[in-house]
Image (cartoon, rainbow, N blue to C red; front, side):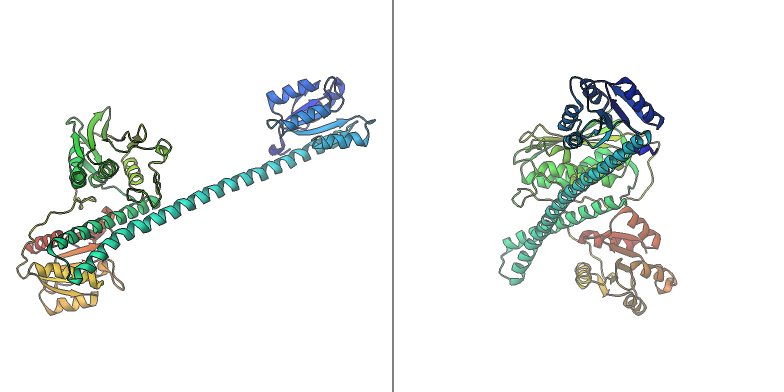
Amino acid sequence: MPFSEAGLILVVDDNEPARYTKARVLRDAGYEVIEAATGHDALRAVAEHAPRLAILDVNLPGMDGWEVCRRLKADPATASVVVLQVSATHVSKEDTVRSLEGGADASLTEPLEPTVLIATVRALLRARLAEDALRDALAREQTTRVAAEAANRTKDEFLATLSHELRSPLNVIITWVTLLRSGRVDDAAKIRAFEAIERNTRLQAKLIEDLLDVSRIISGKMRLDVGVVDLGEVVAAALDGVRHAADAKDIQLETIPDVTTGTVSGDAARLQQVIWNLLSNAIKFTPRGGRVAVRVERVDSYAQIRVTDSGRGIDPAFLPHIFERFRQADPSTTRSERGLGLGLAIVRHLVELHGGTVHAKSRGAGQGSTFTVRLPVRAVTAPVARTISAPLVRPPLPAVTLPDLNGLRVLVLDDELDAREAIAAVLEGCAGQVTAVATVREAFAALERGATEVVVSDIAMPSEDGYGFIQDLRRLPVDRGGKLPVIALTAHAGFQEYQRILAAGFDAYLAKPIEPQELVAAVARLASRR
């Protein structure tokens, strides 16, 4: 007998020899059997033991088999029990019909042939198994459909939010650029225009970086540049990144450091990103004149970072979903705060990559919230020697006077006209002599024509990319430029890309969007090494 057909069977008959015979036949066939002599005993046995099938004699004292069957089928808790009713030879066809119409799944007449009894039981159990499988399949299909519909709604809401969040800063940028080109803007308005363009450009860069981080998380390609991290320095850097936003809303920033916290093993830039995201959220959802506090302390074997605000708080119903991707407490177009709902999902993933945990707590609307990050403190004997790429969270750079390049000859290689002209304009504005080309072939032709001192090359280009260019360049002899300092420009920021760039032979790299100050400083620094 297949295991799937096995199951507990209840035999109900007030005639002890007949009950014994049926039970013996079933046990010999491999079934587990319990017995009952009355209708009331049968109901109790079903309630206590939950048999899969009941062989129920019609003629029982006190409560007949028809009534027992009716009660079993009327109760949702026992309706799934398969009922095989057994009648004596003198029972009429009308009684058999009565059994079936009363809910019985099948009916047999005494005396029972053992082979017929076993074949009937097996057929009934197989039929019930098929019904259960179909019912489960339908339930799974419904669950899957509901989940798919919810996922589609979430996706549609996210795409609508993404469209809004990307278009809104673009609208500001295009509007101000149009006004500036019209020449009808006074000096005060120009200052506002430049500030608005810079602010909205940085906002778009942050949105794109969040999307890239989520892509890395989903594909399992998020990696850490692990070293010794001083949490005090990381928190200070994150605070610098949000201080302007806090000042704009007159929000008081408080720091409560603990010098005994010590160091942790982790990625300094990614941990700064975690704290920056938590602080940015706290400031975003705290009304003007509020308070945001950061506390760093040692708790047992963990370093704990707690960000507390006096903001709007978190709805208890949304709290379990606070770290899910693409989830926002208010996804509507009328919400008061902007964002894609990705920051906290990224926070959780980065913290878990560090072997830590993050929790959110709020007593409800208007009562603020607290986010707690706990990172394991590991014993570290000596700092890890490494080169750290630019931090992932960068505050706006202050206005500075760019260094003078004093006629430095720079070759710029970028296939995009706007990018090429922008880089050239920055370098020429600092008295650099720039040759700008769009292809690798043009770059080598320019190197043959004149004395280049520094090369700035994009990575992603059609036909032959920056990696192909640097490989061909490094094969040249020194007198033809084989040892020229070369800066790589890439939109694929990250430690893996950084490692690949340096391994390919570049001397430095800058991640897009590129700050003019960083570009000029990098060119001047490499030129001074020659």
